[in-house]
Amino acid sequence: MAEKLWDGRFAEKTDKSVEAFTASHAYDRRLYPYDIAGSIAHSKMLAKVGVITQEEAVQLVEGLGVVRRELDHGEFVFDDSLEDIHMHIEARLLKVAGKVAQKLHTARSRNDQVALDLRMYLRDAVRRTIGLLSGLRKVLVELAADHMDVVMPGYTHTQRAQPVSLAHHLLAYYEMFTRDRARLADCLKRIDVMPLGTAALAGTTYPIDRAYVAELLGFAAVSDNSMDAVSDRDFALEYLSAAGICMVHLSRLSEELVLWSTAEFGFITLSDAFSTGSSIMPQKKNPDVPELVRGKTGRVIGALMTLLTQMKSLPLSYNRDMQEDKEPLFDAVDTLTACLHINIQMLPHITINRDNMRRAASTGFLNATDMADYLVGRGMPFRKAHACVGAAVAHALDQGKELNELSLDELKSFSSLIQEDIFTHLTLEHMVDRRQSHGGTSTTNVAVAIEAARKTLALDE
Image 1 (cartoon, rainbow, N blue to C red):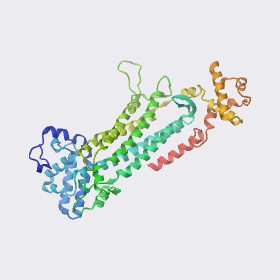
Image 2: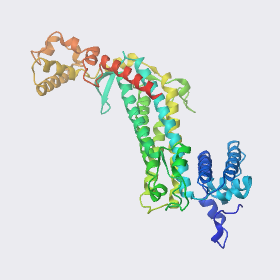
Image 3: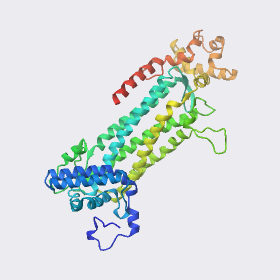
Image 4: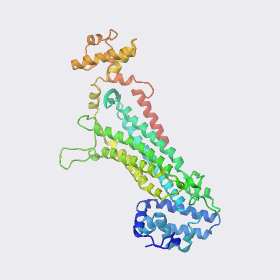
């Protein structure tokens, strides 16, 4: 058992059950690169302001480099008695560098040290996620560009509503993931604030240079209130909120992929490489990837709820409850990363069954609104046109026909305004291309949207 670095005032040794219960190194060890980087910057700052000598700073930096290499190569030995990655690194540094390591913790606390590590970790995670979102958006844009001529049913209430282009449908997800990227980029502004130097809660009596540490570690700003810096995790909550919203978007896309791949829809065929089989039914080809993405969404939303619940009643400043922030946060980062990555790999290999989509768009009276618009264009008030077409739909249902399959005389029986050109008006291409209002599904609009998206993505790189 390693000697505690804080046990000076204790008369009894810590019970092993307490050591096991309070230990967090099993999961917070992923913070070690940031902990060591923060300690190196802290050492250099202490030397700069004269708290330690330059020679001592060099010894600390070299010793931390040794510890980093041991961790990188899997040679580091962990011990529950040292609780967390921060104490492990300091204890090992004492053995590697000698007594000079006892000066490393001057002018800092584990409270601001942990806050620093978590911000640095999350800053990198957000930047990686932003990159993955750019990759996914690019996949969606190119998939849309390759299928601009494909018409499919648009749905409301999971019922066929109006024809839209598949490209327009895919670009809806591009817009969602673009907003996700913007949320994360904005969140990054509040993550990128340096808390080190606030110590336990009240600041320090040493003449430290926090701006210098922030510069060494690449932070955009320094925290302004020591109690706030060590005791809040709203930056992590904000990330989890953005991550949860992004996972909801991925889940909605996954739901459609699952539905569209069924025999009942038959809109797409998933690649064998991204499907699985059944242990009992030889014929099965299961959409496990989108199903798992849909299922994993609950983990990220759950992480947000977990951290909100942990933080909701904590008095200022730091409380040990906050150790529990890391597991849900790390799991959310890992889950979102994995789900984005697998979609980037899977989506380019989907086969679009355009004929099935077109057949579905051709039935179910998806042209009813266009017939009403036709009548409005000839002077009929919309509400009257709505009722007129509703009656025509009821008649067509009785006849087992679509509106465009009724004869001109049948259609004229509902309104004398209807002429021969109604049939052109009710074709799929005409219905799609007439919707030229900003943001509509017309081919012209979609082409403009794809070009704009490509320009945006180029700026993201």
